[in-house]
Image 1 (tube, rainbow, N blue to C red):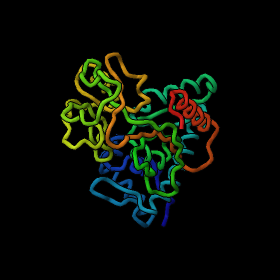
Image 2 (cartoon, one colour):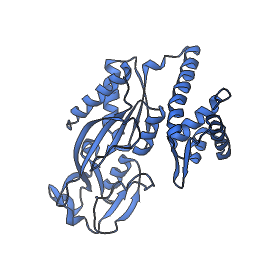
Image 3 (spheres, rainbow, N blue to C red):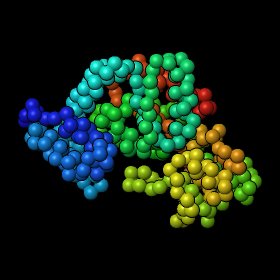
Image 4 (cartoon, rainbow, N blue to C red):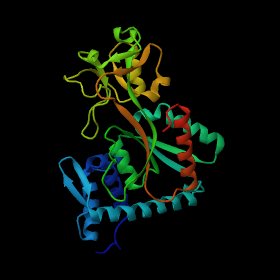
Length: 307
């Protein structure tokens, strides 16, 4: 085992692969060819003397040795990045917080928290990135985000089984709701019966291997008709306003609904609860990260969904 000749490029590539979950995605993010990424990973595995990645049909997974190398690689890369910023006269990393968020958290909760933090602590810089919950968990493990806002549905299992377990704080827990065009027959009442959802047209997020179908009411006993696909929640709501179909929404998005949309509860069948969870690695927080975590908790209370 000899790491004396390991390059910084190999460590950066390894961290990107660990975060993205596939060699192809890492290559695209870095602007490399997939063969170049494979060569960097191979050089790192030769230095380690053991496999660092388990190759699977759906991507790659870190081995036990891979987790050890990832922790060290993250430290080295972050220190080099911090050194470069200091030499360039830029603010130290201690004043920056990196946040990952799943799609609907960016509509109300995250902007409100950032605005509040800017008023009270203007020297703290917040950078954000959107992603699926599995991708954000990988980003936390890879050290490329400090905090992550994750979506969670029953039975509310931990987002991964890796060690050490992530520290999780539930910010909101509310029932899933339905967005209906204001002139739709279902909009006439104060709630919708689940049986009335059969045969409806739906606006849903594009399905992928790591995300469940979002936008269709869970547990329907029929194959849903997907009329439109959109990842962005605001786009979904505007499609609803245009009469293009129905979609599901977290209750926290009710205030962001455009004119022409009614947000209604659904009665009958199992109650569909949804949580927004703040996740982080279990280590002491820097002051900027702790300040943003406090701002996110306060924003969750402000939108009327404290836990």
